[in-house]
Image 1 (tube, rainbow, N blue to C red):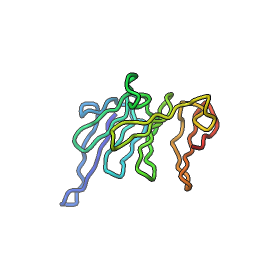
Image 2: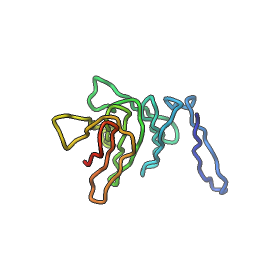
Image 3: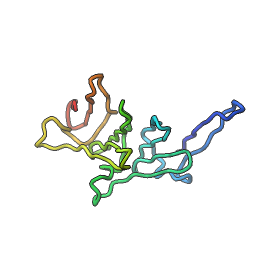
Image 4: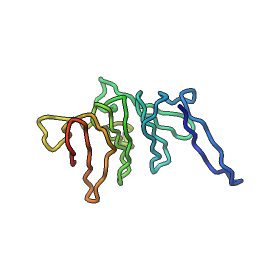
Length: 147
């Protein structure tokens, strides 16, 4: 699988760049793509979160020894909220929120002791931001979670 990123040069014609594993994409299956407000392209794969700056990829993967790494490697959805935070929804490891200033993640995972938190870790639809600043998250193990 490959993706084409386009741009419009001065002459007004489109140019394309192919992005695939030979260009540094971590894995060929991409489940979601996001261009954030800073212009970065984000790719959700089965082998981590990939950020493309127009020149090279930066790949974020889970590190069991680093509590600030992404919570899981199988990424289903990516969402940018109204504050510019990147929400990363994983297949079975909850949500990770990217901290741009520290270049790391805050993990949100299911905790049976916290009834107001996630009730399951498999996020099956994208995050939805409500007008009041809360977020709707749906996991397969549960009903709707409002955070």
